[in-house]
Image 1 (cartoon, rainbow, N blue to C red):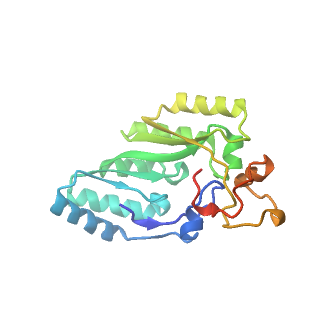
Image 2: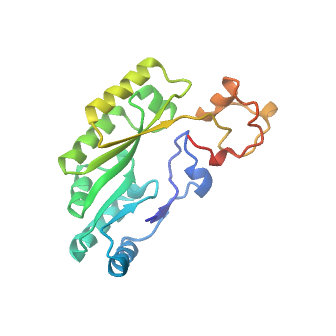
Image 3: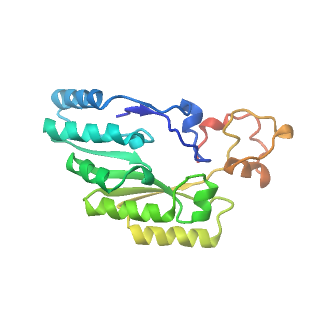
Length: 220
């Protein structure tokens, strides 16, 4: 299910806000419950995956939904995508009570240097703490990482390996970074000034053949 759109943040590798705009908007907890009850009644679904990029952007909405799910006795399991700084112990606890069995988290790296380069606005310690709390309440972790960035050093890679060894996620996604054009659309190379992680394309000479592409839909 997609119950919200966009993300108010601006991770340098991500195109979500380019596609949807930076204004995050969402359905109400009541609307989500109505849809779940309909799907349960019509198709007897066993679970729901909240596919949007930042499901708990509003903690109030998630609390309300969890309370409604518990009261409804709908008896389904669910999982969602989240940032590690969006969920604290109290929220994880009630989410687990309501049937949440998994978090997909964009950790991206175990290197604080790379996290800052990606403009993640989180710390390695926050990643570790959130994973630990999730396991405490029986919520599995699917962790997403970005690897092979041109600026990533062996120390950065080692720190990412240490993070994985420490957190022991149930599922691990390894996304190989691919150079891409500016997130701001079609650009004219001669007049372009590098700004962010995407701009490695220009700095390492891999721009040839890319001029004119729409970078807003490129992969990591």
